[in-house]
Image 1 (cartoon, one colour):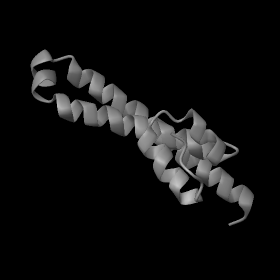
Image 2 (image 1 turned 120 degrees about the horizontal axis):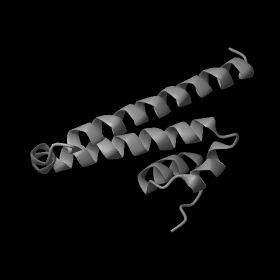
Image 3 (image 1 turned 135 degrees about the horizontal axis):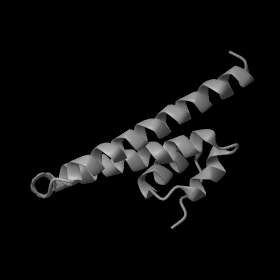
Image 4 (image 1 turned 180 degrees about the vertical axis):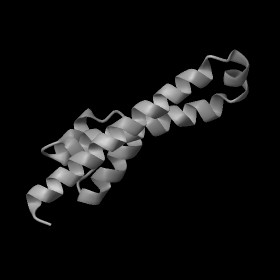
Length: 93
């Protein structure tokens, strides 16, 4: 696979991650409409939201021209920390 083909595949993966993120958010919104269900399953609904946020963040990183620079726009510290640790760069506090 040449670099252009790889870029196209990565862009497609990013698009799919963003779509799944939107689907997860929609699912969470539907489940939250039932107050009883939402009350009984608050932790699970929060987990759905976190999964969606992670997917959206990863999609943005994959879409970026410079994934390392894109980390500055990622609001989830867990993802930022894990990916920065791969680059060997010191962690900003």
